[in-house]
Image 1 (tube, rainbow, N blue to C red):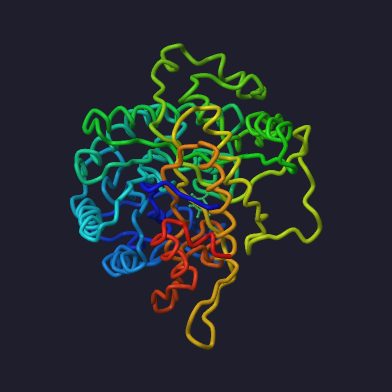
Image 2: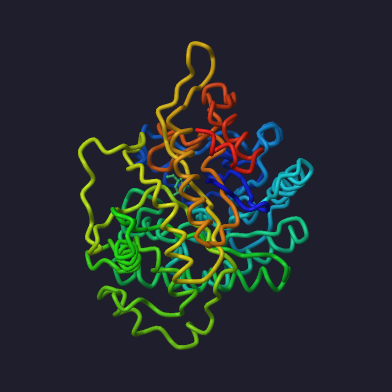
Length: 452
Ligand code: BGC
């Protein structure tokens, strides 16, 4: 029986660079993703796509919010473009940028939709990158000052904040060319970067709480989450262990969920930490550990998991395993076991801050966008999520990724994650079949998932 708590929050999520556009509008400063996409000689992004216009949510948000309301959406998680509100990241405010978010928040509230703010979803103001980006320890205070500005502005209107989206993917931009800023740093520097991100989360959380003690603050990691091939007590235990066992392979460790959560919540690194992390850890002063702040909740972005056998070894997926358009395996179990592992280790409430898939959606001859695969995927994942809840994991809500099709980072616009189709030449929004389906899931608080 699929059941969700009566106060469960059903929402959608997106991020500034992926949907806003208006990249240089009304005093906005450049961000590292603007620079990355505009790189002289062509960017590493597919088709040379960029977020200059994206879904043009910067101008079309009233229409988007009206559509959210029609679809019963209860919460919208969006990120603030830091360079839109502070063009240099650490200097004068851009009132026009703040006005945009003011109106966005007010309209959401007027339509009964809870605004949830992510402070940082990867679009660092370029001026801060020139100062070393997240490798510069001054970022801890700089990020806290930015958090304070936002908390002051939205106090009383916004009750949930998320500090940093996927520190693991922030780090990616410092050791691979597939993400901004596209730097290539040694592993030990990347270990330091995670530490600065952990301190920055903590300082931002303190800044928000100083302004608004009632606000809830989350951190949103991603990374390895293991599921047992066979659901036995031993299988579960092995999957739990494998989830938090840090890889020794170069760079693989940077995709562990616990590389950041252990720091801020347990104030240490796991014993399995690889050499570059251990080497860096030896230099961390005690005061740094004391400055760490555990979030109020863990926001988790869940797309697929790693299947492991009873010994916790990676299990091979069979030939022809179901995959999304991006070729990510479809493993609904991850949304059952992932939250369970995280709750067991850290004891905090969980919010599913992203879940969804990319499909090769098209407009059919009838003018509609039929996406039965997305409906099937979401149905499977939500059914599994209800198992975690039934087993006692406090899950606050579920935010589908994404409301609109949008700029999928290095994959550009080829990948469509939305429940609403965006016809990019006209920017027309066409709700897909999954939008009506999700509206019904929300209206019945998930009960309709029991129907077939
Ligand atoms: C990110 C989103 C991204 C989604 C799908 C998450 O890693 O937070 O920005 O679009 O996954 O790739």
